[in-house]
Length: 147
Ligand code: ZN
Image 1 (cartoon, helix red, strand yellow):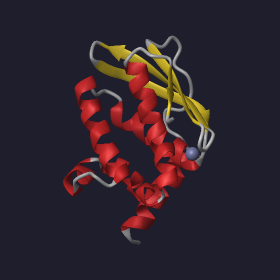
Image 2 (cartoon, rainbow, N blue to C red; image 1 turned 60 degrees about the vertical axis):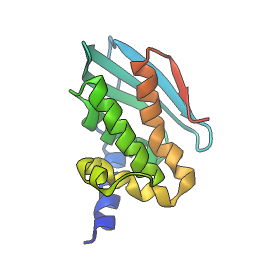
Image 3 (cartoon, rainbow, N blue to C red; image 1 turned 90 degrees about the vertical axis):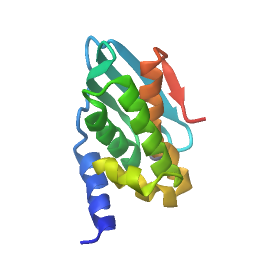
Image 4 (cartoon, protein in one colour; image 1 turned 30 degrees about the vertical axis):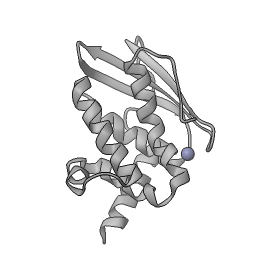
């Protein structure tokens, strides 16, 4: 099994069984995201403990890439503070657009599975939607769009 197969399996697994799927009620912050290009819609719910994301869930309907990306994101950001999440976002953005360093890719762990998306520019917005939505929630906003 090569790395590409492994990454594909991670995406398929997280699409079939999304982690942290559902609502948080009450939530300290939430935002809705929409990717009109593909039709992906999702809502991210946060419970905050000071600067830290104590809990995170998401729900919505979208393609396999958007669902798997949101699932992987929730696992990666839970328990982290805003500064760490911003660094992680920068690394993910670099990974998706191909401008990232290989070292950053290694530090991303399972999130690196999304790297294959950069070969399909139309899908980059599917993978980044959840991150834009998370940023909107952290900023106290209500909506994010990839357009
Ligand atoms: Zn999509």
